[in-house]
Length: 448
Image 1 (tube, rainbow, N blue to C red):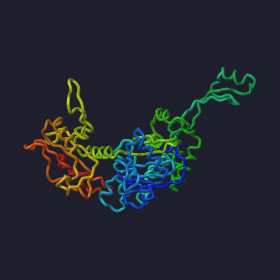
Image 2: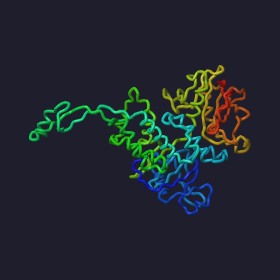
Image 3: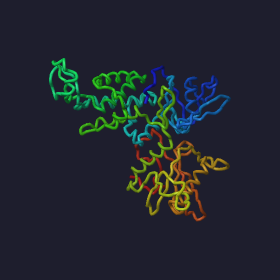
Image 4: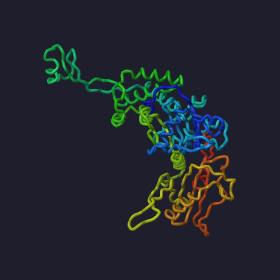
């Protein structure tokens, strides 16, 4: 995760999706451009211009008469070799004009990340997150340290480890060939093999290495202190020399459930979760999430918890293709969600991480909806529903789109194939008062 990143003074920069970054002296004069160091800009520019997947989250362009990098539809954290930490937040909170916009966006992201398997252990109601504004990376580090602290209190597990040493006394099994080789003259010593009960096991080595990594990075005093205390607790454990091999040999035995969360964090820290591996000898770390996938997973998990028969709601179905050529199928159709046999019919749903405006009805605006999305839904409708039934497009809820569009979009004069456009609330401030994030009645789902 952050291995190879030399400890330097950290500069924190916050930007929203599709925001602009520049090292130009004019950047500070523009409200929509965030100024970063020359070193950070050159590093990110190199990433942007490469042929690898690094180029997906940045786009190089000219704006306001200066060279800028535009962040794409990813959210998360990028660490640059010079110590610059760029926090990229979801655009949704900015669109809502909320107070403490960055904090709201950060909480929305953490809430949605819980729908991903790799981040199911994230806690969003931690007091330290509520009381102080903390960068995302520091939030992740704090939660990892807290998980390891709980593990230490419950007990660090030891295991029998087979050792071979040239001992001053006889114990275990004498290795005759090694004895002759090493002790032909020194006959007062014994080359033996025995099982020692030690903390040296794969799980502990991985956690120790992850602790070492975050201790060299964190700038939060509480995390610094806790990381040093935990490192002392793992002092007898060697660092993992090959974390990939160690992860493959992890076996959580009975009574080791308290290792699950610390090891999940350790995997993220050591392996990362990113669409790319950053460039350079000092491989700076990125923790980036494609927001379309995050939003899709969040909506899918939410709906599956609310349908009476979860097995009837399928994610990422791909049984149909757009066309056939001879005996082969081309252009696989993959709607995000397929709701089977509700109120006597099937429904195809697709999520779009885009901002639309229900007040812009005429001219070229058309609510900000995309013609390509409607063509895509048409393909789903004819292939999965045989041209008759309900289609649903789900967009994030904003101040400009807070209610379902009044009418359905009809693909034929007989209204056999209809498309509804619905908002989905991703606000982190929603109280548990019975309100739903989406109008379930329009999906044929009864509130539980």
